[in-house]
Image 1 (cartoon, helix red, strand yellow):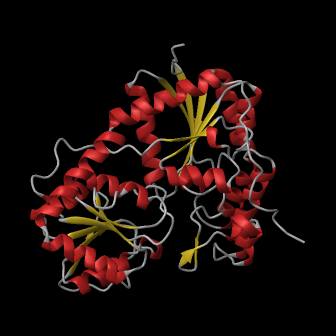
Image 2 (cartoon, rainbow, N blue to C red):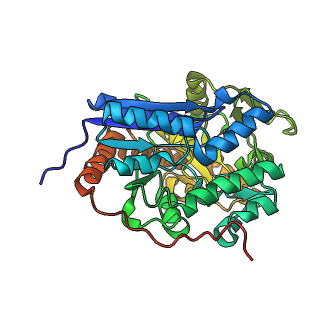
Image 3 (cartoon, rainbow, N blue to C red):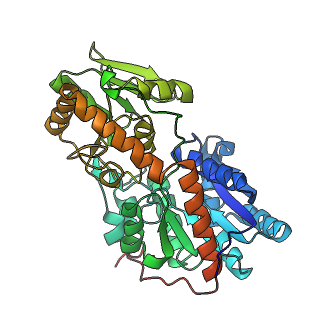
Length: 409
C-alpha cells in the first residue's frame, strides 16, 4: 500500500519571548512543508505579548494550566480548517497541552516536536546549580519547588504544577500519535523517563540550511569559534580557559541581549556580539574549528550542525546528544564535559594538524548533507506524516509514567 502525506496540516506553537533555536526549527519545518505543496495553517501565540510584571506572570501561570481562550480559538480553527493532521511544538505558556484532547475528540492525529526536556523537567533543561539534575524523574516535580529551580518559590511551584497536571492527565502520552525528536538520545529519554512507547517516537534531525559550498580550506582558519548564549551551562568559561591553556585564539559570538560581564577579554579572546545570520556564517567560515563545551544535556546543538555545514570540524563535550551529533574522529573530536585539560589538548591537536582539520571538516559536511539538508528533512518529515496517517486509529501505547507525584508522603 502506498502511503500518502496529508494535504492539509495545522501547526500549533507558542513563540518564545526571545526567540531561539526551537522557534527557528518550527519555522523551518513549516517552510519545507509548503515547499512540498502541503497546505499549512498556523495557530500561534507569542510569549512576548505577555509583557512584564505580576499580571503577566499570573496570566502565564493560569494559561499554562488551562488556556481557556486559546483552547476555544484552537477549537474554532480546527472546525473551520479541518486539517488531516495537527503538528504541535511548544505549547507553554499561552496554548497549554489541553488542546491535544480536542484533536482526539475529532479523530485528528497529532505529531509533536520535542526540542527539549519539557515533559520530564519543569524548567525544561535538567540543569540546576551548575550541574545536570534529574531529580524530578525520580522524586516527582516537587523537587523543582524544594530546590527552587526558577529562583522564585512561586514560579517554581507554577512550573511544577503545570508539568504535574499534564502528566497526571496523560495529555501527551494519550493524545499524541507520534513524538518527533532531533536525536536518538532525546528519543530514548522520552521512552525511559516520560513513559512514551518506543514505537511512538521518531528521530528527525534538525534541518540545517547548507551553504552552496564548504570553505576551501578549514585549516586556514585563524581561530577556534564559539557561538551561543553566555550562560554557565553552555560552557563559554571552559572554552576560554582551555584556549588560554592551549595557547590558541578563541573568538566568541553571542546574542546582543546577552551580557558578557564576567568573561574577561585579552589578546587571545575576542567577542563578536551579533545574531545576524550573514555575520554568523562569515564567523564560522573564518574558523579552524568550532567548540561546543556544554555541561548539560544538549538535545541537538544547532550551531554544531551549522559549523559542520561550512566544513568546519567540531570539538564537543561527550554529553547528551552532542556525543551523537559529533562523530568522534569523523566529524570532530569529543572530550569529557568540564575537562579543561582535555579540551585544551583537542584544541592544540587541531591547531597543529592541518590534514586532520581538513579530514574532519569533510566528514562533517558530508554528515550534515546526509541527515540534515533541506531535502533530507522534507523527505523524512513527509514519511513520518504518511505513516502516522496510515496507522491512525491504533491506540498510542504508553508505559507507566516514570515521574512521581507532586508531593510524596
